[in-house]
Length: 139
Image (cartoon, rainbow, N blue to C red; front, side, top):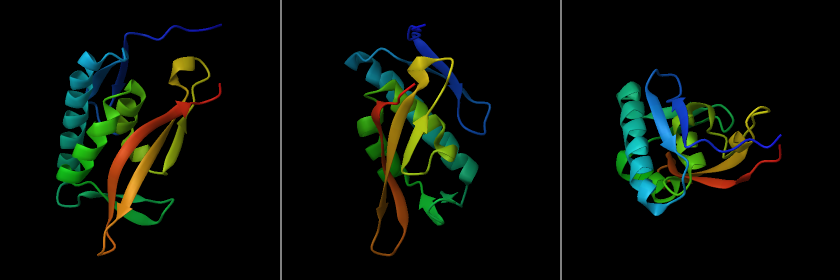
């Protein structure tokens, strides 16, 4: 049975009670709404991390730094285009594996793949650069 895409995806920021309603309509006018969600999510994530502005990635065995001027700015260049990428930003803590496939047996529209780009600076620091919707996953 084909399920219809809801007007909003209701979710929380990973490991918080902060609730968000992500508009699923692809119109450009809604990019600013998704940008606001991403801004709020990054601000909350950075406030929770405090002085330790990184998340340990067990897969890479590296600390991935979240830097406002780089991570937020570059993520919003791509993440506002698709509701899937905005959703992935909110699930960031479980996502840092370079490519991550969201799978849901009940909701077909929740099956998609996201790609995370991590840059390595000259000093060896790993910084999250972008988060982008890649494709609809097979259901």
